[in-house]
Image (tube, rainbow over all chains, first blue to last red; front, side, top):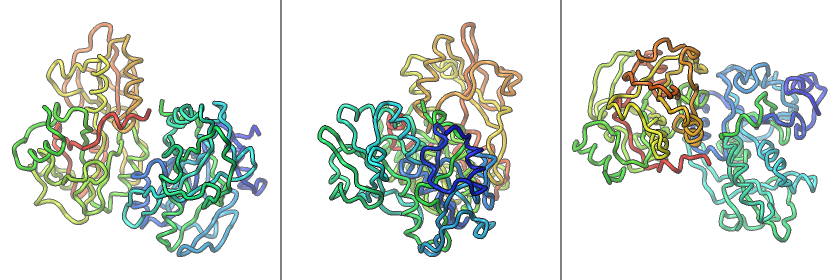
Length: 259
Length: 259
């Protein structure tokens, strides 16, 4: 697809695109969304700051503003994602295609880096993604790696796993290290049991994928972490993107490379 | 000096060290301090997040806690810096050697990366610091580079300048790029007038240094920026370190290298 992020968001806004965003606007950063009331905003931002691998902040809107002005100044967070999830007191209550009925003047939207971005970089380096090959979601696991708490926010780090050919593991570390704002370097290489994962074939989120002989499971911190942690506090209102239905920013992926 | 950060902070806490911290605990990260009431904490943290080159956050204390638990879990921010500055409504009212009379349950302490750290890296690469050679403070300038505002916080970026031999400019960019959490890569190379600096020999803060033939002035975002910006809002109470009297963390400088 050769749509620009602005054109793609316009298609979403006008109801012409309603599905997942994977594979669209390659080369541009896609982001996880978490919307919370301003009362929770400082502690949640602090939680992200303390856990930058799991919660790399791409952009935060001003209180009450639906415009992510640093990452997509022409966008509206209320209408420019294909599908949302609305939680009240930790319970999923709605899955709307826009937030015009839910937006309030006290809300703050957090855009958090997403693994699509570093996967692109791995693929460009000839390191394939097994979950793409098998046509499923990436496997994700709750681990024994505790996040650093901030106020009411705490809980385990969730990781995603990608099997990497043994001879490519070092390169996978190098390639993803360049991108700390989209989860960056792995948090663990090899032995799943060392980070509290009992059974690699039974992920907590997403789908199981094949790990072949000559491959090592490599684990990256996952954007599900902040959502899981925020949900655990059962905020009165919390809104997220629906899985796979991300926010597409105007930021070029390569511009996030730290060196 | 071979004191550990813990030993050095203990000397400060007990009044045995009262001067600047430069040259002590080499290899460990030193940080700027800004303390604000919790009412301002979200917008200030957001300001830092939006301006990571000028305001790289090293650690933020929990509301009311004087312990920077991620960067020095055995330290106390109220006693472990040699000298502080207390501002009320933007006016300097005191320069105490501890904060026991000023600390309140509603305060949040921000530790922000400091250029001492990347200067060490440059020196290790054979790139000398002119202000050290001349025994003065680094020259700093207000620029025409606006920060990205967050709520009440806005203002110009303040930069520090170091003359670099022309043949070392590329290496200086490489070396400091590794350390985004201590201001990272330069914001500008060469022509001062392009960033609104009229006269290189008249810095707004610090001292003038000699720029020799065959050298290029290179500009880095400076930790004075967040203090200047916060001061501009004239908060009821704001506390900072006194210039040069920094907080010494337990973090090894090299661990901040992103790759």
